[in-house]
Amino acid sequence: MRIQDLAQLSTRAFKTNPLRTWLTILGMGVGTGAVVVLVGLGFGLQQIILEQIVFGETLLSLGVSTTGAQNLKLDTETVAKFEAMPEVLDAAPMARFPALVTYKGLTGNVFIQGVEPPYLRYAGVSVIAGETYTDADLGDNSSVMISPAVLKLFGVEKPESFIGQKVSFRILIPANDGTNSNTEIVLEKEYSVRGVMKDDGTLNAIMMLPELRNYVGVDEYERIQVRVKSGQELPVVEKKLIADGYRVTALSKTVEQASKIFQGIQIVLATFGGIALLVSAIGMFNTMTVTLLERTKEIGIMRTIGAAPNDVKYLFVSESIIVGFLGGISGIVMGVGFGITINVFLNFIAGQFGGKAVTLFSFPFTFLAFIAIFSAVVGYLTGIFPARRASTLNPLDAIRYE
Image (cartoon, rainbow, N blue to C red; front, top):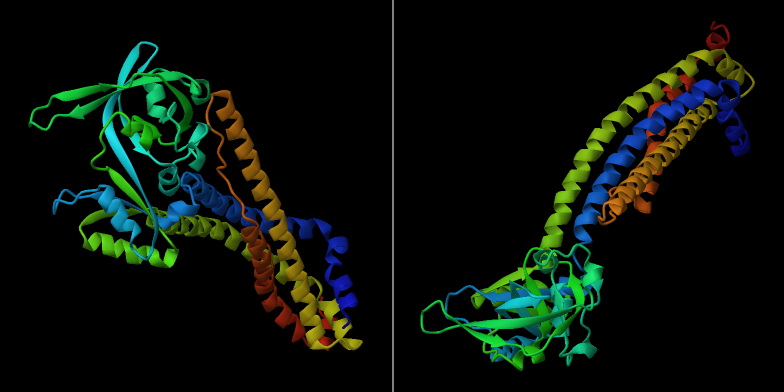
C-alpha cells in the first residue's frame, strides 16, 4: 500500500466518526496534560531553588575555613600556600569583624566583611538591587554592599530605595585579655550603599578589603574561596584541604544533591500523571477495539480486492499513532496553557503585594518533545493488538460479519 493511500485511509475516521475520534484524542490529551503539568511543576520548583545559586566560577570554587583544631590559621601565608597548589587558579580571602552601623540616627549590630572582587564571584554573591563590585572597584573607598536583613533592621521595605543612602560604621575589635570588652574603631566617614545582596539571613555589610585595612589590622581571615582550574581538579583539591584539617564546602555538591532530590520529585509527580495517562490509554485501546468490530466487513472487502494482511495492520497502527500523537499535542497545549496561566496569575498577585516574580511551572522544549514522541508510542502500543487481530481475519468470514 502506498504511503499516500495509507495516510488517506488512516485519517478517514476524522470524517466518518469525528465526534468519537476527537473525544478519544481529548481523553488522551487529558492524561498527557496531567503528566505535563505535574512534571512541569517539578521543573519549576527545581528552577526556583537552583536559580538562587550563581553558576559559573561559583561551581569551581571551594569555601575554606578552620575547624578550630590543629591551630590552623587563615592568613596571608595561607592564601599564598593555596595559590601555589598546581590545581588552584586563585584564592580570595574574606575578613570579618563585628560592627555597628548607623543610618539616620538609628544604630544596629552587623558584621562587616572586607573582600576583593574575585571573592564575590567565587562565593556566588549577587545583588537584588544596585550593583556588585567588579575588578575595577578594588580601590573603592566610599561604598558598601548590605544584606536585606540590614534593611529590615531600619524598617526599609524596598531594596531599590536604599541604593545611594549613606551609612556609617564603628568596628568592634574583641580584646585579647579574656574579657568581653571591645575596642571601638570609628570609621570617620559615611559610605554610600551601592548594592543590596540576595543573602537575607544575616546582618552583613561588605566593603573592599584595602579600605577595611585602612582602619583595622587584618591578621587572620574568616574564610578563603579557592578557585580551582577545572571541575576534574575540584575533588583533588578538596581532599588535600580536608587532609590538612580545613573545613571545606563545595557549592557543586549542593547543586548535585538538589538535582537528585528534584529528580526524585519529578519521578513521583510523573507517576501520578502516568496513572491518568494509563486510564486514557485504556480508553483509547477500547476505542480501537470497537473500531475493529465496526470495520470488520470493510476489512474483508479490502482483503478480497487484494490488500495484504500487513496493509491492514499498518492501517490500524497508523490510525492509533496519529490519534496518540494528536492526543499528546493536545495534552501539551492544555498543560502548558494551564501552567502559563498559573504563572501569570501568581506573578500578578506578587506584583500587587510587592513580591518577587517566580516561574512555578517550567516546560523545557526537550521534555515537551519527549512527551509528543511518547504519546505516539503509547498510541502504537494501544493499537498494535487490534491491528494484529484485524490482519488475521479471514476475508470471507469478515465479509459475512454483521
